[in-house]
Image 1: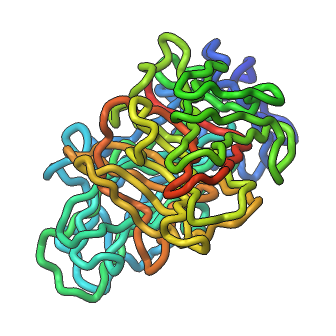
Image 2 (image 1 turned 180 degrees about the horizontal axis):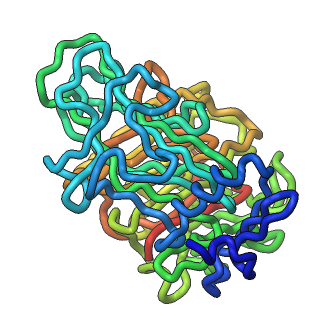
Length: 446
């Protein structure tokens, strides 16, 4: 510890303000600095030491030793400091999500009570937080896991079927440097406990954006370039514009830069022709060699896909478009996990959360209305927890209930040949249709 205050490059020099540069390990991924006021120096130094000493980035907590984990300044707390009257979470070795233990809400938890776990930590560079979770709710929507970022409800997760385990993973938006608070809160409804309720979290990771982009074990792709002004798609053939494969059905589609009613740099329009029912055009994201298996992912790679998309076609009953993970070997089908606006639900319908479960399509109403000539930031992440694969859906970085308190979480499978994708298709009649994409982000393990 003596070298921490030595004034050496990469450590701390004391002056009218405190400048902290961490760490001095020769790894450019982790270099960051912050200036803080004198009176806050001890708090910030301890917070930084907690984050970086002996570990570096990314930071992962698996609750293998205790809940709350030992930490300077009591960074972990039960109950959460923001919900001080809640019941406490504890370490559980019963059916852990990963390793030998997970953090767990009380089992059983009394009806109409809340329990919580909290974390307070300082980021020295922009970063995301993610975690795995397992839920078994007795009273759907009455029982739910709430996740707060800086006091703002960011995810509310529940089950669709009572007394049925559902698991998944949540990935936050990129959070700027500075002090942040995170709270996990299990809310029990008014129904009496049947003893099988369960709420656990595990593998809480804080990962800087630099690590996402440079860590050899991770994949981070952000595509805003897209193709040149006009590209015709040959019917039934692939057009390769790295990192994209474009495919159509029996009739040719097209790609237009800054087309439709949503002009702007980086906005690309993928179009189906008004030729026949079921015509489709699809863009599939293909990874460079060595980055990920082309033509298919697995849930073990924890894929997170997010895009900003909409349509410059007036919403109608013959149009379906979306973004997420699609079957690259069967693009004409709705074998798809992601956000879909589907005109078969009506021209005034909402986006659906769509997934494949045991080969069957599963849909839930997101409560987000489709709007002509409007771009939406939509994402989906997939993970398998204790043998159950779940898809978590986000809008503007939040996973909040849809219409009728439908949870943004679907238990699903992830068949082979899935890849990040965006797509547009006509349904029951010949009808031109556009899907407009501003950007697409992919984050996953290699």
